[in-house]
Image (spheres, rainbow, N blue to C red):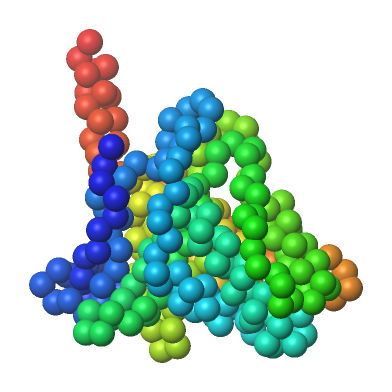
Amino acid sequence: MPPRPREHPYAVTGAAPTPTTPARRVLDLSESRMPLHSRLGPLPPSTPESADPRDAVLAELLARAHVQLQPAVWVDGDVEQREAALTAWFAARLAQARANGQVLVATDPNDERVLGVAVLLERQGTDFLALPDMDTSLLKSATVTRLAALDEQIERTVPCDPHLHLHLHLLAVAVRPTHDDVGLSLLDQVHRYADQWQLPVHTVAWDSRTVATHTRHGWCSRDDVALPAPGGPPVVPMLRQPARTSLLSDIAARATRGAGTA
């Protein structure tokens, strides 16, 4: 089984990684382990990784990146309440991704400050991943109800093809302000991982900017889905099919040549 992701510094410029000019450190999935559920049949038992001590920071970063978006405002009109709700929700999903997925973290090599994060969940067939327990003790009951409705609506947009034995769900990408280049680098790492294992990736965009960014990078949007009334804003399900890797293309070419000479 391939090794776990390792940290690999490279310049984030939107071009190909250049290891000789490090400016950011990003988890490199090019030599990542095989997805937990890559084999057909029943899901194998998985052993959750230990929580990263930075997970609290990551959850706060994810919450702050989403707190002003319309789906979050719908959850609670009070900014402090909804930031607390989103922080609890993302913390629960981070724990889930450590057991069934990948957490990519970009840091500044000078001071190890977290600059960005991407959260991937592994999904199989029609199996949904139930939200783990989260701390809602400081949240209003109405906020918890709407947060659960948001989570349920996101689940409903996940492809439910029983023949889709494994796919990835990109829960979110979040970066600190002025670090959009880091976000694009993390998205590129997600694409490389998906292409390496030939897996489709699904996500739910919360705003038009995310839709535009993903569309530029090969994602296709599906029909908008409105959150429940009253005042439920739309979210946009999106899907990216894996690109054929050079290895698979080479195998196909050899098979074609062999068939032609038979």
